[in-house]
Length: 174
Ligand code: FES
Ligand code: FES
Image (cartoon, rainbow, N blue to C red; front, side, top):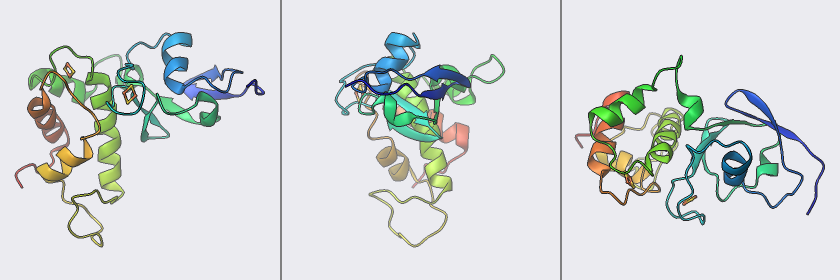
């Protein structure tokens, strides 16, 4: 279906949306904008490799239509770099061996950034015991649950959790 052309901002740059409303946000990022950091794993919402931030919220870009993002701010792994250097979470992934092949890594990092924002907003997860508490204690169970949509076939999950925990100084001992 052909729609009127709109625009979004991707990593601080205005970008035309496709006129074909069937194009996913993932395909717009990779095929049109050549932002290959965002990975296409399953292309059906099961692996988390395509995770990006839309207005600060983590989104599976393979399941999101590009035209739905009209007027929104999209941040990919390329946009997380700070002052041309690595994002602190990227450095922590290196320090803690949070990856092997690296295919899941951009999605893991974008997802973790979104997860921390959710914690700050007090959004409960499946394992949150007290749904009435305003500040959620980010236990190891909470972090594992909240990152469970991002799969790592290389088995680097321990390093990933350590990197996230250290970067945001979350309590992972519970
Ligand atoms: Fe989007 Fe797997 S590629 S969840
Ligand atoms: Fe290979 Fe995660 S590092 S899939």
